[in-house]
Length: 263
Image (cartoon, rainbow, N blue to C red; front, side, top):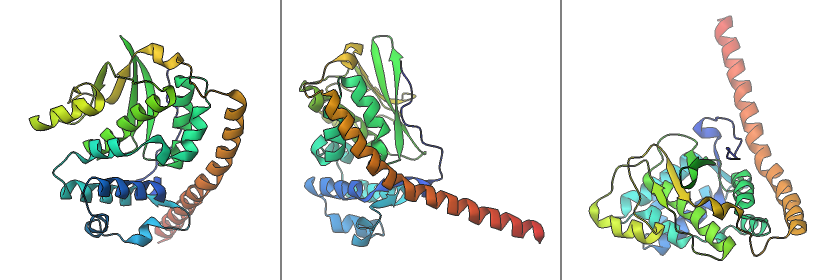
């Protein structure tokens, strides 16, 4: 029943695509929290052109630079701040698609499948726990900060609550990062509904298993099929450039190896 839903290959960091829409949302959220978006870009060594690539895609390295710049400019936990700012309506294509799913499990499966529209930076797995199910986020590469993880987990929580029209309080929250300063515990509890346990092997939300079968108010099979057809078409356009880039890289490597061997 529980499995990995994102089927990405293991890419190098340069192959991991991120939508420029996500980059713009990061900057909007940081600015809403009191930071200056232009200054963040300057500190990250980027400019407005980075947010407006014709393909609509950037790469993970640029995203990481934006995160690190924001983290260095704020004395607040920016991941929690961003998790509070972002809502499903910031991701309209994904939100409309998920709301027609029959239940939470179906929405999680579909959401993970289509998360590449936003970013290829990680994937979601669900693992049976003693008192429920752990919704686990696995970054595509090492080096993600706790702030990035907080934003993703809070988005998962926010989407689940928006889809069910219910408050979902996790039984537990596990985070890999070390314990933050004591003054941040209250803010963590306010956002997650519980104080996380830090220094754990995985980043995950543990919820009651009954939530997986919870029927979504907007569940409609015919609409779900219609939305899936539209989003599948968009996925083809989004993922095609990444495939081309990978083939080009492999060809360049093959030529390089041939030259080395002939020399």
